[in-house]
Length: 326
Image: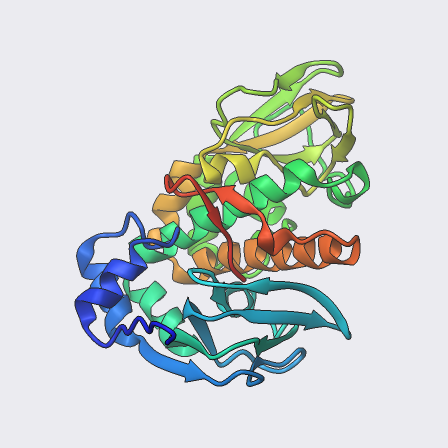
């Protein structure tokens, strides 16, 4: 006879939530709020939980069973407890990434998409833990990508002189960076006041692998050459951010960064940015959505290469190596 683990009791749901990366370190009151918003669901073998290209109405935290994932007619992996389905897609503000079908009778704790976003707005520790988890996931995925999938497209250099940029100029520049395109002006003004202008000569080393990640550089003019220990090279240029992912993830630098030409940049620190996010939910969600969408794209590209990124274990959120979800 198949054993069944039920999560009708609130305390049992809270204990189970403590075993997954995003909620492991949250205050008990926040975990209770999340657990209270969940409901137990059962799915028969063969039942479809998510359809590719259709809106994601809820996330499923699997407690029993197994899901098979198919994208564009191609199997790309499976999910099993305690992995989740729909979490990343909801945060990315996208539709279903694949068809997810129960291979056997499957149970899950379900949380409506709207309820998830409301919880994140009401409880900043949940939003912060989510952002750090996504940054950690992105960090490990980037470590494995080929050079051609690293780096970002350049924009035209921002007009710079030898003087300091005034507040308006800093705001205008930050608006060019994708993450800040929709940030309200009050929040953007606060970010602008916290960044400092730095200038580097061609050949200057910005950091080396293993160095602490003490901030991110927003490039106004010039370019940065990045080299990993295994010889992969990629570049960042105007209107891109260098080093922000490992800074938000709390991880060390994983590549050597060198000014390829005269480099003018604004340096921002992650702790200051997080302080501003606490009072600006819209800006915080822009960051969350950016990381979630980027992570979804990486998973898709890896699956197309015949890899199984959802089956890999990641050392995230002080839990040790755990299986990641979608």
